[in-house]
Length: 416
Image (cartoon, rainbow, N blue to C red; front, side, top):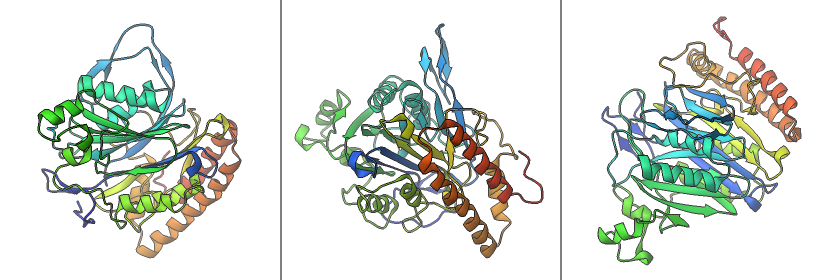
């Protein structure tokens, strides 16, 4: 796999296999930051180039009999009610990289490396994304779900299907009224509330105080461990970051590039502009190489239900993909059966898309990319008129899906 060269402000981590990893970017525009006042959420999920990512739908479920729930590595108690969710899921795990529920809550996670030890077994950050979506009917409730699960069961386990990759997590959790950045180091956590403006996270701890909320014993632990003098000198990011930490984000890397793109358009941010952020190559936001942007999500979260809409890519990377509109309905053809899956299915569109582009020369690939993005632009304009019309969304999804698969058909190998 490709080791790559990454900018100095990026988190760079060396695995046991000698592979350098940098991954994922998540952002949000809340309140007056967007053109309509709705919250706009976006994420690129950067994963190993051969790790398939699927979009799945799980409907709301009610249970009357107590039961247990098998997550990726550990079993926890199930709850009586789980919300309907759309989830972008690496094929081999129970959890997901990002998603949204039918209550209008969106969550994405980021890998962070901290001074706290990483447990060999626990809840993956991706498990916590899914659990927060299934159990949270607001951003604040999802935050409470995730933090309580971290405190009770811990986070840990191998985050890679092949090789070894272990990390703690940060999260961006959003609904139509607010967003929360949650950063963790083992069982310790701190959360920052955003009620207006823009915010983005990558693979760095970024909360330089004790946030809006934090673990009840966090400050006491830090003082007793000689990590700070008192609450006023407490800096979560500085204390728990491995190596050197700085509050200054260079504008040339992924995190700085997204911050710049968000801030220059405050008040005018739209879902279409969000696509441009996720497709961006100037700062390496759209990732290629040994790690790629394997899945992407954009959600508009409005206090008016008919203005809440969601788009996911089902192929990678986003610059060569279409953003399909999704509803909480199995009628959308771009959905796949939920994981964990033991093996990769060669008929998955994600797999076929990757193989298709690998057969093309540079000019051929650019020509196909232009045609695919032309489809994307055509249907993104249609989405401006959805206004909650589920039938139209499903119709456009399936029509775009059909055109998309036809576009990347190669030697009649497309078998969906």
